[in-house]
Image 1 (tube, rainbow, N blue to C red):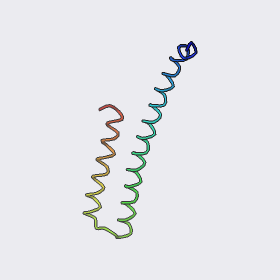
Image 2: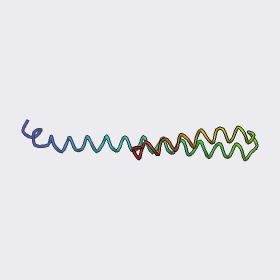
Image 3: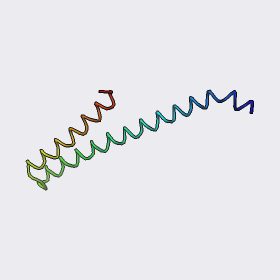
Image 4: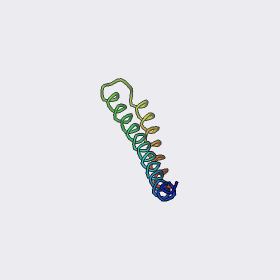
Length: 76
Protein backbone atom coordinates (compact mmCIF):
# COMPACT_ATOMS: atom_id res chain seq x y z
CA UNK A 1 0.00 0.00 0.00
CA UNK A 2 2.74 2.46 0.94
CA UNK A 3 4.70 1.45 -2.16
CA UNK A 4 1.67 2.17 -4.33
CA UNK A 5 1.30 5.62 -2.80
CA UNK A 6 4.97 6.36 -3.37
CA UNK A 7 5.03 5.15 -6.98
CA UNK A 8 1.64 6.56 -8.01
CA UNK A 9 3.06 9.80 -9.50
CA UNK A 10 5.57 7.82 -11.56
CA UNK A 11 2.92 5.38 -12.73
CA UNK A 12 0.80 8.33 -13.82
CA UNK A 13 3.68 9.80 -15.79
CA UNK A 14 4.41 6.43 -17.33
CA UNK A 15 0.77 6.04 -18.37
CA UNK A 16 0.81 9.50 -19.98
CA UNK A 17 4.04 8.69 -21.83
CA UNK A 18 2.52 5.43 -23.10
CA UNK A 19 -0.56 7.30 -24.33
CA UNK A 20 1.58 9.87 -26.15
CA UNK A 21 3.68 7.13 -27.73
CA UNK A 22 0.57 5.24 -28.81
CA UNK A 23 -0.96 8.34 -30.39
CA UNK A 24 2.30 9.22 -32.17
CA UNK A 25 2.59 5.68 -33.52
CA UNK A 26 -0.98 5.79 -34.83
CA UNK A 27 -0.42 9.17 -36.49
CA UNK A 28 2.82 8.00 -38.08
CA UNK A 29 1.08 4.87 -39.41
CA UNK A 30 -1.72 6.99 -40.90
CA UNK A 31 0.80 9.28 -42.58
CA UNK A 32 2.79 6.35 -43.94
CA UNK A 33 -0.41 4.77 -45.28
CA UNK A 34 -1.36 7.93 -47.17
CA UNK A 35 2.16 8.28 -48.55
CA UNK A 36 2.18 4.65 -49.66
CA UNK A 37 -1.21 5.07 -51.34
CA UNK A 38 0.11 8.12 -53.19
CA UNK A 39 3.16 6.17 -54.38
CA UNK A 40 0.96 3.28 -55.52
CA UNK A 41 -1.28 5.70 -57.37
CA UNK A 42 1.72 7.20 -59.17
CA UNK A 43 2.93 3.73 -60.11
CA UNK A 44 -0.47 2.74 -61.49
CA UNK A 45 -0.53 5.91 -63.58
CA UNK A 46 3.02 5.35 -64.82
CA UNK A 47 2.11 1.79 -65.84
CA UNK A 48 -0.87 3.08 -67.81
CA UNK A 49 -3.49 1.48 -65.57
CA UNK A 50 -5.47 4.73 -65.33
CA UNK A 51 -5.93 7.86 -67.37
CA UNK A 52 -4.64 11.27 -66.35
CA UNK A 53 -8.03 12.62 -65.25
CA UNK A 54 -8.59 9.73 -62.84
CA UNK A 55 -5.03 10.02 -61.56
CA UNK A 56 -5.43 13.74 -60.89
CA UNK A 57 -8.76 13.19 -59.12
CA UNK A 58 -7.37 10.52 -56.81
CA UNK A 59 -4.12 12.42 -56.30
CA UNK A 60 -6.07 15.51 -55.23
CA UNK A 61 -8.03 13.44 -52.70
CA UNK A 62 -4.88 11.94 -51.21
CA UNK A 63 -3.05 15.26 -51.09
CA UNK A 64 -6.06 16.84 -49.37
CA UNK A 65 -6.08 14.01 -46.82
CA UNK A 66 -2.35 14.49 -46.19
CA UNK A 67 -2.79 18.25 -45.82
CA UNK A 68 -5.70 17.76 -43.41
CA UNK A 69 -3.62 15.39 -41.34
CA UNK A 70 -0.72 17.86 -41.20
CA UNK A 71 -3.11 20.63 -40.17
CA UNK A 72 -4.54 18.39 -37.46
CA UNK A 73 -1.09 17.58 -36.13
CA UNK A 74 -0.13 21.23 -36.09
CA UNK A 75 -3.37 22.12 -34.31
CA UNK A 76 -4.84 24.27 -37.05
